[in-house]
Amino acid sequence: MANYTVKNVDSFIITGFDHLQNQKFLGFLILTAYMLILLVNCINLCIISTNRHLHKPMYILICNLAVVDIIFSSSCSTTMISVLLAEIKTVSYYSCISGTFFTHLGDVTECLALTLMAIDRLIAIRLPLRYQSIVTNSRILLFIFLTWLAGFAVIGYLISVVDNVPYCQPVIRYVFCNYASMIRAACVDPEPYFFISTMISVGPVGGLLPFILCTYVVMAYSVSKLSNNASKKQLINTCLSHIIVLFSYYVPKVASVFLTRLIVGMTLTERNAIFIVPSLVTPLINPAVYCTRTKEIRKILANVFLRKKITPNHLKSFS
Image (cartoon, rainbow, N blue to C red; front, side):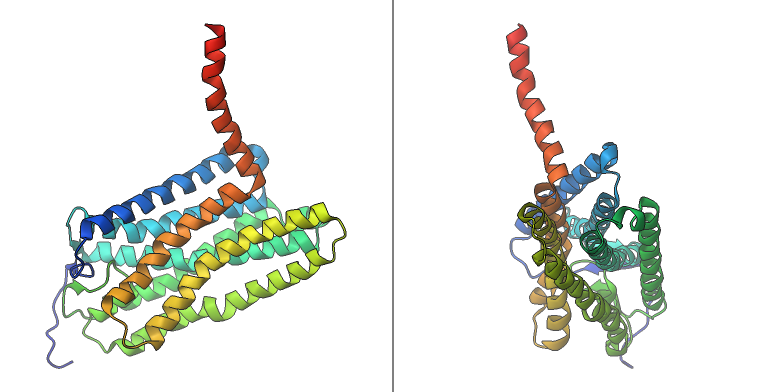
């Protein structure tokens, strides 16, 4: 560390894509995925916000998840798109700090949002007669506010850490700004600092994931005891949607934690791929699942498209 020279870094250069050959093609794929994420999540938000009969706890939670997905994907994708397509590799220090903040904020709040959704479904299945009195819109909004408050507190601490370390080189070797990339650019031994981020990452995987899995085990047991096959099928479909969303988030996260911390010989390309996949795949799967598997949202979408198809025929019959 004595060989490093401490500099006042006011910008960083993103070099994570420098070794790739088809940068434009990858940039086009990321841009396409990002546009789809914005489109489908905004469709969910518009449908739920404009239909008063959908102003219920479960749909408020879906809206919260959509907002989280937009923030998470935007904080990662915009940097990658500007580097790959616009060839703008330089990002200011404060832009990098803010990008790091929103990337990790989206990650933490998504985990907490999925926990709230699991608790909501557990109460709906275990206590169906008391569900409406226990789970109200005001209580859901309060718990959503608390999850965001917790996210701001945890990630605010991480940002205070990276903002107070001395930097030696204005180079980010990853594909976008995050805690790990900024610590690697600092004039410090990274291992103690990575321990902090590892503990924050292990918390959701080692604490909240087992809790969520236990709630689904309890739900599965309750559903198996139902005698009405129609009700059983409906509950299974509802739980299946949540399980798909749950695994789309946790599988990349578990892989990221274990592969980056346990496999020392990973190449930079492999590490960057682990960061890119969760930032695009999870925010794209979540709204797609709720659009196609939630009966009320699917019905509204069908009515919109059918209306568009019927209108021209009616116009022809009147002419």
